[in-house]
Image (tube, rainbow, N blue to C red; front, side):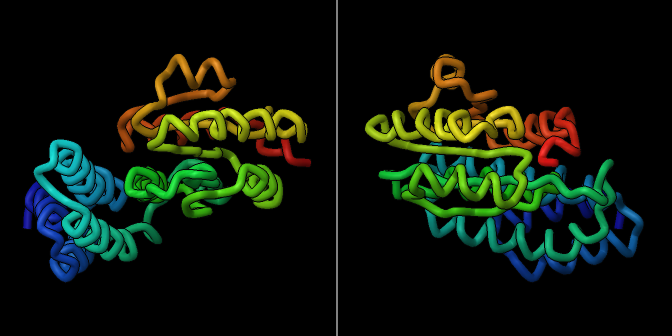
Length: 221
């Protein structure tokens, strides 16, 4: 198979929720010498982005997203161990969760998937996460990036409280903070002292990888 055929096939496998096909093509990518990072980003992650877009447009629903993410993870399980990223010996750590009071996690899960795809070790705190849990876990795991999301205007203040909490514990300068979700804007992110807001999961992951690379590796002592 041609490289483009394999990559397009991986995208289609995710869109159609075909876990077995994703596994089979992921293995074929390795056998044929396709760059595993390219296969993940341009193949699997691209399929997930398309499904996310369909979900936003109400052309796909939660069961479709779940099937798509299962297919993506099946492919990633095969490809990810073969990805060699710069600084891969010191894997970047992401702490991610939906903030206290918010039980939505579809968007958060998509961001986590994309962050994993670009090489982060993702520590997923889940949904309705107490503010102190973000801070405690960031310190314990020596996080590079903290990602906080909400889909509700009523819990936007809690997103800000995570940033304030990191500041009060003296660790704000040790991590990059990205915030997201439907009501979150770049202006709001700036106002609360976060580093970034991206409406798109893949863009968020690319930014996070780049931002984490600017941090001093010995900053946690």
